[in-house]
Amino acid sequence: MGRQPCCDKVGLKKGPWTAEEDKKLINFILTNGQCCWRAVPKLAGLLRCGKSCRLRWTNYLRPDVKRGLLSDYEEKMVIDLHAQLGNRWSKIASHLPGRTDNEIKNHWNTHIKKKLRKMGIDPLTHKPLPPPAADQPPQEPPAVQEPSPAPAADQNKMEEVINIIPATDHEAEPKPTSLESTINNSESANNDGDNIMELVNINNDFCIDEIPVIQPHEILIPCDKNSSTPSSSSSSSSSSSSYSSNVLEELQFSPSFEDYYSEIMGSNMWYDDFSGLDLLINQDDHSDVNRDNVTVIEPPLLQYPLMVSDEECWRF
DNA sequence: AAGGTGCCCAACCGCGGAGCA
DNA sequence: ATGCTCCGCGGTTGGGCACCT
Image (cartoon, rainbow, N blue to C red; front, side, top):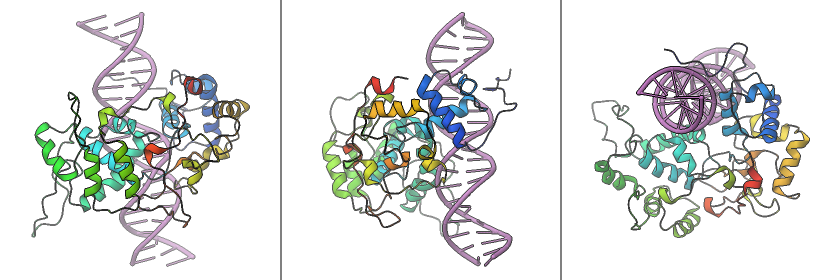
């Protein structure tokens, strides 16, 4: 028997969201919280299906969504995590605060895959690519199952290549972090190496099982717009979406929205800085100078001056 | 300047799992 | 145990943009 569609598609709108729709959705969720997505569009007055609303919220409108290119550090984490977890984008995303599975998936498919191939690494298996045969044109590696999670036998090979994070599911014994060697081995000598090494030192026992999965109430929030926060250090949007990158700026929120943010952020906090969630962004991944030649400081991922908001801040 | 091509990424689709009656 | 609903995930698509000719 066929599965029922998630919603009655007749008369429902598809495609890009408009500012008006975003506004309705945000206002509704801030007022009522995230409940029963199926009911959201009806209650919010949207001609969308619940799935579409959920996707829009989780991938774009959520206040904690960090936008823009992944930093070098984040990229390395994604590679390590992918070697460990395979295409489990949501799991990977849960280790990268503010990043969504969709964003990581896209970044993997458009950037990291290419980068790894360039380095002679098969992005699917994380093993070295076989050298292209002289009489054969370069081609995609044979369809190989994603390493979901990589078989133990492959683990060593993979570690040889990119030094994946050691699995510690059943191990209490701390192992030296692979991240450090990953960074050391990285052929891309990057400018923020010092920062990364600091991070490595901080996270000497780094292992994905030990990274707390970010829960909604633990979301990163810059705590002071006047301090050197990610938002203040980032000066340009790297989003390609002309509307969406400044969606929250362009929206005129209802009083409930403004109240909400001033309440949870404090009167002098992020609210004024809400001129686009993209302000939370890290910049170009290989440089601390963005495309407009405005120097920005890329904050190390784990050194965000973050405020872990409590339940009060996220009482959905 | 105009048309072609490739890339990027927001959004959609369909499936699987969890929870419930 | 079974069937249903809902949510979340991963794969895929296609519109828009940038770059090239």
